[in-house]
Structure formats: C-alpha cells, structure tokens
Length: 383
Image 1 (cartoon, one colour):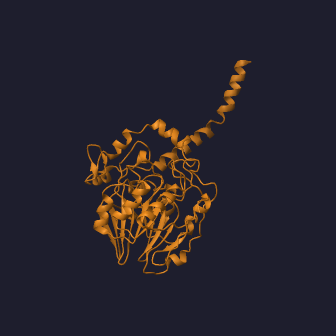
Image 2 (cartoon, rainbow, N blue to C red):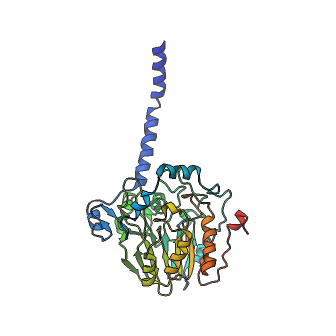
Image 3 (cartoon, rainbow, N blue to C red):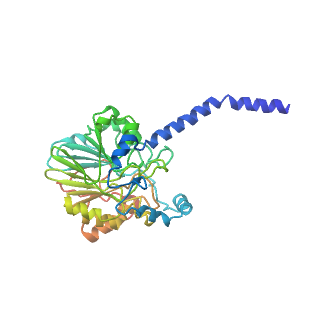
C-alpha cells in the first residue's frame, strides 16, 4: 500500500515536469537575455586600446583606479542588505501616484531656437536641440532589474513607447539596469533610431538584435558631429556590469551636447571628482545641466554624488540651470523618495542655483520663464 501511494504521488508530480522545465528554461532564458553580453573577440581587442582600460585587471577603471575597491573595503554586505530591506526610511516609496502631465509632443517638435526637454522620471529624459531629438537612458519597463518582481517603478511611464515622437539618437550613460533597459531597447529594433554609448555597451545591444550599423560608441573625450550638434563622451566616476560577475567590462560616461546656440550636460551616474571642473573648463558654461541627485548614501559616495555635491558639480560645470535626475521613480537607496529634492532645494537656495523640478511628462522650454512648482511638497505636507 505504501509503495503504491508513493508511486501514485510520484506520477502525480511527474506529469507536471514538462511545465516546470518549461518554466525554468523560460525564466533562465529571460534572465540570461537581460544580462546582455560583454564585449568579446575583435570588439574586445579594439576597446582594450583605450587608456581607461586596465589590461592587468582586464577591466575599465576610473581616474583613480582603486576608488571602487576602497569604497567596498568598508562595506559589510550583510549589514547593507539588512539596512536596505529593513532599515530604510519608511517613506522610501510614495503612497500615492506622483503628479504628471501628458507630454505635448507636437509643441516639443516645433522648430525653436531654444532647448526643450521632457523628464520621465529617474534618468530618462527627451531633449530637442537644434531639431535633433535625443533620448537619454530610456527605461520604460516595469522594473529596473533583470527580474520583473525586483526594483519596481513607482508608477507607469506617463506615455507608452508607441506614443513617442521619432527619436534620432538614444544615448546611454552605462549598462546598469536603471539606465540600459532591454525591453525598451528591443522596442527600437524596427525603428531607424541610432544608438550612442560609451565603449563596449553596444555589445549588449547587438545581443538584443540591434543592427550594428545603427550602433556607435565613444571613449572619454571623443565626439561626433551631427550637423548643428556636437556630442562629446565625457568622464564619470562609476562602474558597470549586469550579472554581478562581469564588472567593468564596459565603460561608463557623462555626456556633453553642444548646439550652435545652447549646450547642456548629463552626468550619468557619478561620484564627485575633478572631471566636473575639467568638463566645465573645457566646454562650459552650460545652459542646462542634468545631474544625478538620488539613490545616494555615504556608504557608496564614490559612485553617487550627495545633494551638496550635486550643487557643487553644477557650479564646477558653470551651469545656468540645474535639473536633478536619478530620483522620483525607483527605490535604490535608503532615503525617502522625496529627500533628494528637499535636500537639493536647500543647496540651491544657499548657492543661488536656478533649480528646475518639472513633473513627469512636463514640457520645459529653457528660454521661457519656468516657475517650477515644488510639486512634491504638497504630498509630504511641508509647504
């Protein structure tokens, strides 16, 4: 009787085996696909010629090659894990939907002598400069992680990818999931949009099916000319990798965009270092700076600026108007969702910085008066 019962039980579960195997392989395929693929073969040999690639370590390095290692020396990963899941601010995520506006793309595309931009949250923003439409670090999927149940966005993007206007260039700062989103990149496979990245990052895109003739990558201080617009790949202090085991095989960067009349800067992700002043001295002053201000902590200050450093970087760059990015859509740190805006506003008051804080989807024209509402204050009762 016992033998028959065990046999029956085994047969019952055995019939589900094909389903479990299919689930496992599907999950594994999606996971591996999201990891992308590091540079290899002739591509790897080409990028290894960069002065920022350390052949001994077999990876890209920052100006101070050991800055990341020194940061990690003082970190207790068990303690960090515990703090992230149990010791963070109780307001790490908003309780309500954050305010947004449906973008007016018709107005956004009209010829204009001034930079126009639309911020979609975190580091995703669309810019029209001299008629060129540039899309930075677009993340439209539901999470900023290889698995959809991790690092969920606070709310859906204000528009669907299908609603976007024609994009000339998608520009990526580095290959982390909250900046390089496989699902968003795959949407553009059938479009004519071109891609511009730091060295090595195009390897992921080729793995996801983007034709090689639409991919371009640059080293720090290299540039491309697009008629009235020049785009320069400029330094940052950060790191890269998508699987947890393949760190720094691709480069990270900031971006400088120079038009005939105006220019702007995007920091990507970066700790504070001399590169902000170097870029400001070479290409400033900037009409607009998009600088990360969120997901920071003193424990990882080497790779993400603190609010006072966001302000300092803006001044180093000789910026006229500052747009804080890398906040407002994902929870990747221990602070409240609104702390970055509150902290930077105080710095802006001290240093007389023109701080622009648009809502998700709001169209901003920098030559028109922008009475930017500090919209988060209504949600936290600090007005």
